[in-house]
Length: 419
Ligand SMILES: [Zn+2]
Image (spheres, rainbow, N blue to C red):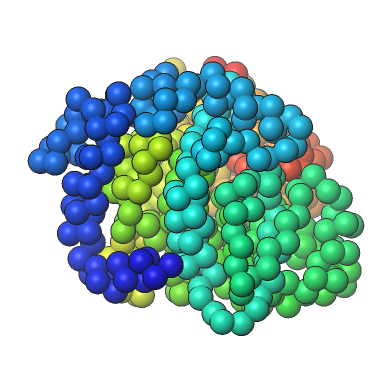
């Protein structure tokens, strides 16, 4: 913790220097990676390293990691642990984590004890903040990741909530616990907000942190209204701790220990895939790893931080809807355009879901009466027509088709051959 503070003070406005220094140091670690040894050199620039994605990263897993662990061994132990809901999957002192993803497209990630401790310290420092007052943290997790189990703090007591438990059980526990800090995914925060509005739940956390799922702007606004405070965010995945909100509530990339390259995916250069290099992960070096998340960049934040500000995490590239228009041209529609069309169709729309099933079928869930549903359907139809997409049927469904414990994505593409 002290080292983190020291670095923060020393390099607060010298990010480039800090990254350069860490990049040089990292080269010694890369010597131990059979895959990267040939590249590593103190004077070599990052551009000379190959860009990786989940597939190539998993293909060369055995050669990339510095602990001589094979991909089969890692997957085997991670899957077994998940099946048995025993989340202490370790190989020696190295923890093994599975990344979420569509089936068949999951990744496996390694972190040793030192890396886990650093990770947790930076999350705590950035998100919760230091305070010499005993505080309780209610922490909702899909899997009780031993990353957080390892946090033993004199000032924070962690209480884990298993997302697979019933909402009644959560509400009972929360009413008793009265947590100071609440950490959960947006779909669960929404459930809690409904319970507050129905007077079933009465808690007054001083800080609320949204994790794991996309926090849609309208959900954020509703949560802020019910909880009467800013909703903070942590953007992290097994691939790394990527961003956290500043006191202004803006998400900033952690560019003191990450190098973020932006791979723009639209002509306006507004949306990009982050290509991340983590300067502090040694067991499994993360060098130029392209995530398929779609980030919308923000203008510089009034807080004065020099790190890249994020306006919105729009979703993943598999949340992009794809159709052929009447001239047989492939049209890509980003989730945010769909979202805006739906929520601006009627002020009462809050709970919705848009699922593309095929080139000619969209399933639409709107939690409202027929009149409001028709408005949303027309708005969606208009977006399609603007792109000359015709012959797409929109069918009403009466649930979000979301199962608790899974991540909620309000807009998603479930076409079989999407890529
Ligand atoms: Zn800021």
